[in-house]
Image (cartoon, rainbow, N blue to C red; front, side, top):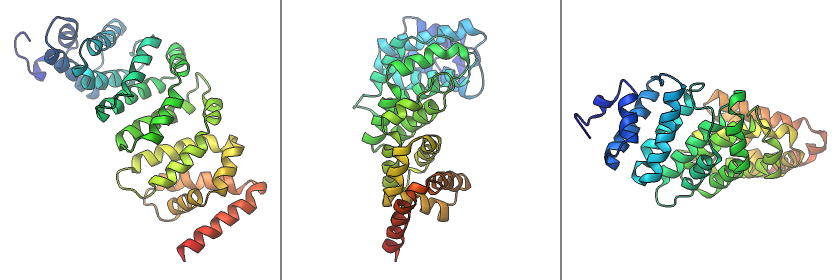
Length: 284
């Protein structure tokens, strides 16, 4: 890297890091440039204009495809760009979404999987009309179903958080309605099982919040999911536990709201009562 190769020499303006990303420097140079971009975005420094933002976005993808050692820092920078909306690029190709999805299947490094899913989640949070093609790309590439698969198959907390963050963002996105696909994928049932499985386990507190959030969005319109949860002793035990003893008021409210939906359904009264009796019997 020409001149001072420190991060400090690259931060302050996006021009220097962009030049290093787009140039013929080493992988280490480009990785450092991507990191400096991520740090600037994290500190609230935004690209000067849409043209610069687009150039950074494209250069990050090009650098990753050129050398996979750049991936972690580049993915952090892409995530930062999505957070800096509306300066974020107005078009993301299906190929880029597909590339990120491919990275989430990397079995070698959980950090890459989690970082790629976090970048996809950044896209999932975009809701201005100009980003409809981006959300369409997530829809067409089955990112909701893929995130659910990762959530259930991985024990890594960071992967679970990124996956559930993405699911939670997609089911409330106003540009494209993902709820029918979420119901078709039995999301309520899957998350009810995961919620019960990880209840009380240290290190999984954050992902449990995303599960509760998503269940709260879906449960009111999911009759099969309602019946499943009402009949599941483990699900009811988990909800009751969060309602009674959890030290996070938001978690208590989320669990209470889900329980209220179940208890408001007359046809579920017997199943819910039976599940509650089993919970009390197991505790005595």
